[in-house]
Image (cartoon, rainbow, N blue to C red; front, side, top):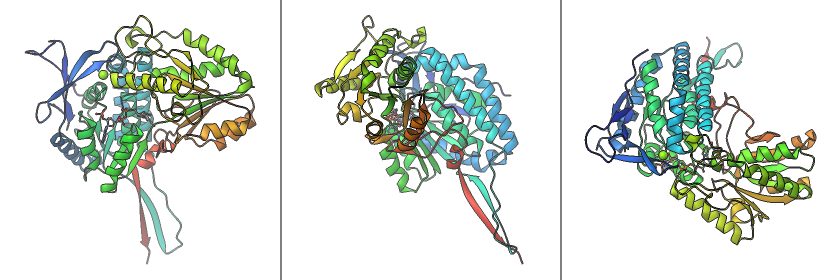
Length: 496
Ligand code: NAP
Ligand code: MG
């Protein structure tokens, strides 16, 4: 193991706050300022204070990162035996585990999420590196019978240099899920973290150095998506793109990928329902729904932002929801609260606007609706419940990405399925019932990439994850993700 150098450089001279650290780009195993030395600030959404200065990468920096990744993928990483890749990625998972608390605190400062949630996300990132480490020497081709005159076999080869565009809602975890899979099968990576949450991606570079993964295998260029991200996705030297983020940006990335026919995985948004039937265990179904929408302040792509409930039990369900929501502790995530702030002023304004539009469209406010009492700074919005939401109104159709639950009702199973499928999205759906046949009928009729029965978010690093319809295409997580980071070469040999 190498002695890691530090991602963080303390300012010694001028600057507003002498203690504000500066993080540099991680390119070719080296920490560098951006080519024009520009930086940007990243904020703690709970206090609105600056957490760090971060290098604002340029196109030149992207070129350097791609060049380093190319050199590594054709050189040292290619020469690293699969069984050695297993060891290196496993060592990386152990190194991250050893510093989990430091990473979790940094994630919470940068993103606002409750510290126990950050801990879970870091633990899951450890798992991704460990899971894919185990796969690094097990991805193999096949032989195909063409009769006695031929020998035919397939090779599963890496794409090459892969670009990973990361959102702010689960910053390090999203890197674990896509980068670990890409590296395991022999690719190298250039990562573009979200501007709001660049810190843990950079800090992870220290661990790559420490465990001795060759320089250029993992590179991080921070900076604005509209510049650095767009340049990266348009780049002719990128062999594969994984984009996780909003539909609007996803569409731009798809256009960019079209230019050089670059393979693409798109993980986009959702408007996922939680369906509660009259025979469900109501206390458990409502607790799962509360977890499904208010975890991470509703800022999960697979959050259950719609509750579709049988009309006969609606009042009872609402009673449970209101009671459970009233017990959620809201405040700075670092204090171990249940719900932290939203990521930014922009998201705060956007979510409040949706709540207002919902009410204008006839929805009835049952809980929340604005800033919680006693929290004067930070982007906090109380857990919000809106009842009597019309199925075609904006708050039933559009991703809000905040702690807002829209309640709709149904009278029979067909109506429940119709409502569940009635959005342009298809990421996830939760089904709460004791009737197994009903659960299976719904599981087959709902158009979504993830079906959770009687536990919202059920699944793990092992289970394939991705969208139907406009929630995207391609799958991350599980062994299936490896299909997107390899390409199949068929070799047919005539035997004379
Ligand atoms: P976003 O605004 O689309 O940004 C995602 C990433 O794309 C950021 O790194 C952003 O950089 C970058 N970017 C912006 N413009 C770009 C461009 N023209 N070309 C290339 N990259 C560009 O999404 P977000 O607001 O960060 O994240 C929330 C969204 O992500 C939600 O819609 C959520 O549902 C979705 N999400 C989906 C999944 C999934 O697995 N399906 C998981 C998590 C989140 P900047 O930060 O610098 O703008
Ligand atoms: Mg931040």
